[in-house]
Structure formats: C-alpha cells, structure tokens
Length: 449
Image (cartoon, rainbow, N blue to C red; front, side, top):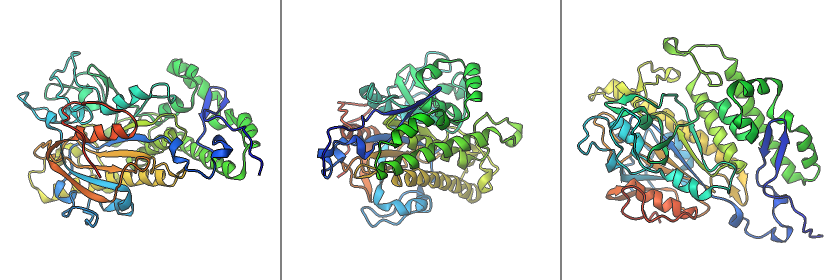
C-alpha cells in the first residue's frame, strides 16, 4: 500500500448560493500513517443539556436500588435499551432555586439556576441578574474551535420580557443558558431558523428576515445549492467515506423536507393559537426535529455545546398526542389526585421517550472508533423535583454518553445528600479540557467513577 501525505482538511465545506455545509469526520481526514491506530484522540467530546419543566413524579422516576442492577421505573422505562449508556444520578440539589427570602417564583428560579448555580435577582424589569451557565463557560473556551461556540434550541416559544412568575422576569423562565449574569441566551424555537443558521453563510445570517425569506424562495434546497461541490468531493473519496457522506447528506435532506412539510401544514393549534411557520403541529415531531438538528450540528462539528429546552418552566403545553388536554403546569399541582398524577407521569414518560430518540440518533451515527453518543455527555433533567411542592433538592437527573471513554455509565449513582448539581458540571467541564475552580454554588467535583 502506498501511503500518501495528502489528506482532506478537517475543516472541509460544501458551498453553494447562501450555503456552507460542514462535513463529518472522514477517513480521508486522518493521515494515512495514523490509520490502524487509536483514532479517538482526535475525536471531540460534546456537551449537551436537555431540560424538562415543572418537575417529575419522583416515585416513578427514582430507581429503588443503587448500582448496576437497578430496575427501570415507569418514567425511565423507555430508556432501558440504553442501560449501558446512561447514569441515573440521585441526590443532586439546586439550592439556589429556593426562595431564600424572595417568596414565590420557584419556576423562574428553577430554570435560571439549573445550569448556573446562582440565585437570580427577583425583578420583572430590565435589571435581571443571574449567573454564567455551564454551557457558556464551555463555549467561551471553545470560541474559534467550531463555527458556533454553542447552540441554544427550544421547543416552546415565550416572551423574554415582563412578569412570568410571581414578579420574576420572563427571561428567567425562558432561558436556560446565560452568557453573562445580565445576558440570557434565548433558545431558537423555529426549526427553519435553526437550520438556516447551521447551513447558511455568515452573509445570510446578517440579512434581514424579509431578504432571507426571498433568498430562500429562490433556493430550492440547501443541498441543491452545493451540488457541484458535493460531486467534486465525492470523486476524491473511498467507498467508506462516500457512504458516510451519502448518509449525512440524506439526513440533512430529510430534516429539510420535514421543515418544509411543517411550513405547509395549515392546521391550528388548540384554542385557536396560530402555529409559527416551520414548527410541526404535533409536539413529538417538533421535539424530534430539534433533536435531529442537534445531531447534525454535532456530526458536522459546527458546535460542541448545545442546550435544548424541551419545555420552559411553568409550561402550560397540552399533550393531545397522548390524550391529555389539561395544561401541564396545573396538573403538577395535583394535591395527590391519582388521576392528575397519572397524567403527569404520562407526560414525564413522553419526555423520556423523546430523549430515547435523541440517544438512538447519536448512537446510530458512527464517528472515529465509536459513535456520536460515545463521544458525548448529555445531561437530562429538571430544576424542580416534585412539581406539587416545588422542591429543588434531589433533582431528577441522568447523564448519557461516555464522554470519549471518560465516563463509565450503566448504573444508578447516589451522591452524598446535599451535593450541588454544579459539582457534576465541574467534573464534566474537566472532561472537555475546561478546568474551573468554581461554578455557582459548587463545593467541589462529583467523582463519578
């Protein structure tokens, strides 16, 4: 075999009119002399956070036993196929989500403190103040490494100003991610906008919405725009890389078509609320579309840090898809009504089913010597434990992925009582090469081994 020094640059893009498509890691990007060795050393580790609102019914979430042989509870049951890929974490607290003298407003504090470990300032005005979130700590260290330092996605629209919870600004309930204590990062809730951000040019991103819409009208497809570049690239690749490129571009096309289908769906949401353009009518499809955008962003190394707000705190979403027409938030104040509790459990279970979808997409995407899931760390949870009593202790949290072989999942891990969830975040930051002394109310690092 002749070993060539020529190889494809890692930062290779397919370009077209208003289009820049980053491509996934290929064999052609690895020096020939390195083939056959451990390729994981050059594979990045991703960090993601998925948030669900209004707490979880803890008796149907928390496994009864500790260690590897725990039994999956009703809410966790959809994840059983991923037993070896997840860590269920118990006894992690968000103490700063408590009132601490500020009275009502647990939902706002839950969302604002979940990734920051900081007690937010109670205000409905412009003088908001929280803390820097763990995802933005990571993003600040990765600036310039990827096209986007971070990506903020959401599945529920909300305003960011005004009073959304007992005198707390809507910024606290709407934004999980905070770049500075005064700068929340509102999630992108429109799949079309997120798609265009990922695969449009920097010039595209600077255009006003009307001009972008006109350009989109004349551009039939992201992939059609980059057709010539794609054909030229494929000629240079071996069979294995051609298959990877084909699968990757198929995924992009499939996401693009689902967005177009949503844009053409004229059905109305319940109670006569208009559906924003580009958002699927049914919530599970909406959430899955956002999950697929996250997978594409990781696969193409456009970013290594993502937050996904599956629902904002205080969410009144109804889940007609599973036969629940009652708003989510009021149901969580069930006052021990068995019928209401069962409905909340069904909503909680739907959310873990959507997490299962994300994990399956990551696990089915090969990368280096493993999969995207092997090279990721996904924190899933809520800033409230019991939604009925608004408790911020012993939160429902799990961690999926192997962090590039730095994690050993497959068990139910119980931390010492009173452990801040920010201790977990410090240990995850270490695994992506970001070393911080403190984060919010952290007291040290969580030893997961």
